[in-house]
Length: 365
Image (cartoon, rainbow, N blue to C red; front, top):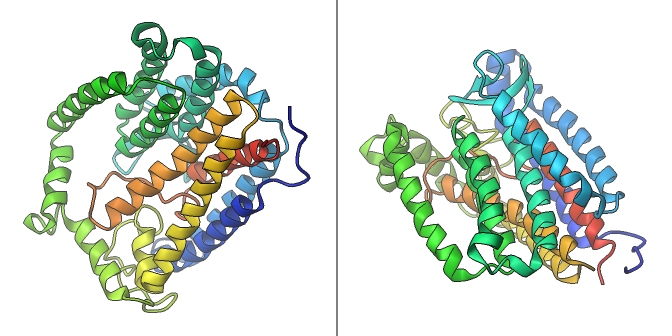
């Protein structure tokens, strides 16, 4: 095995730090008005963000210094625990409903979101499974169906909450990992077709999902209902122009744009910092993805390579969905922008995962 570097990938570490710093500033800017209106304290949300950022950085430093191979033996236990939490959260009176989804476990305003932790647990498990079963992944029944069975079960439990956004990120990153492990495109294509039919069924089974689709295609058909969020998001992005209205000068955060500190924080960022600010954040995420791919290529073994692909996939898919939603290219799914949006479970989980990625970079060939 290659000797550990004296330091992890500096480009990756720097990009993570800059994005996290931008996120803390933007959480305050986007949430100050809402926080003062709801709690009488304009620093309410940013104080919580600083708390979870501190916990997340601590987790990053821990996982960055724990050899990534340890996660191979811990992966099955992590998956079982997360499956248990996904079942527990569905129990009425135990799981907490927020935003129309029974996705939380906790007391009052503090809690954890099990579906967020399942994203990482699934990646850890699939990386282990596919490493151990390298010779069978090209076989549909013996190689591909078992890991997809675990993935499908987790997705089903997440959809019972329901939380389509988190489920979509988990599936997207996992399928990318499975493809990288050597699965045949023909098999994945057939399953993708079945998945599309399943998604159509899920959409037709819940009228609000169909409304989101139709509103996404023509938000002005229901400007005060299903199209409201997309319209208000575009009203924020448009006036931002090239350089923005200035930090703290957003107009849409004055109770016009729902969830300005979470799902639609990129809209506020683009309004205040303009095209240049938005492009800079996207560029920083591209640096994270670029370095993640390099880590995967240079990893000393299959497990490290697949794990790096999965973690990078979580970041890439989540960024793609979030920004796609806020600029009107995708239906509203309710998912945060990694490291930028306010959110304890998501922020802590992502920093933990990125610490693992940084650890893999220390052993790169």
